Length: 411
Image (spheres, rainbow, N blue to C red):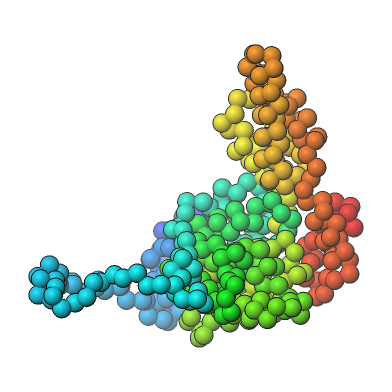
């Protein structure tokens, strides 16, 4: 701008030449703030936070530019006095009964120690979205709908972006929905709690609802935590088609947990779900504030197939393998299909070596023959999905699926 000082103009030119230089951009933002240009300072700080989401200086500058006080530094907890347990035990040893006794399990299963309190929560993993080969469209949608708002609390506040709601991954089986969910947890640095229908359903009345509640209570205690609801069509089937009242009550409990008792109940709990048949999921689960963001996970594209094939061939004896040719020959195969191709090719080479008595390497002939024999496991899914895309696409819910089927000339 013409009103800028020569120093600010020079810094603007330098920032334009090096847009990823966060310290330089923050220096420009400081000068703009000192000059009373708060809005311009907010804009520069916002760009800096995009490049460095955890930068403390950028967060502080954003808060000052927006006129909000910076959060105070966390105070260390007061030192805890040490308690002499041995002396206390000697004093009351003749009075206090044994600390642990074997309590029989009640007939209704309520006191079963192996049920609701035994959820296996995995710590933050090293897996990231960069480890997912290809699938750039899926990564971009995850970034826009889920990850960018979570990483940038200042920008989220600036644009009034809500964190309510979860993410539903759907598509044919064997295409990496669970792998992507783990990568999202890694991106967030969050714990990972995977839940399936076998973990929740119980033969005793009321226990399924209790188990569902305990899943979310465990996640709240472990926050930040990603709750991954696998096979959502089984956990959250349409209540209108469910004859058993216990299953309907379980879906109702899931809806309650997604809503939270109050606005802060699910703070730090991120809900991801996966299903092969989203048209069988209860519509109430997909309303705003619940699992309202949907991403279609399709069979891997070319770069993803190359990454998957490299992974499954990395420790096997191979020679003269043309990955480009193999990638073209495996178009339409899922990740599980590609793993089977590598396994079948290794089996062919192994049997040939056993018959001839001469060990040989796995070659293109083995891999192409295996790929030719594998029937794409996603084809039956697309046959069912085609009818849904044609006749049940209310509100454009399956527009991504329609576009893919048209591109593949399956619609």
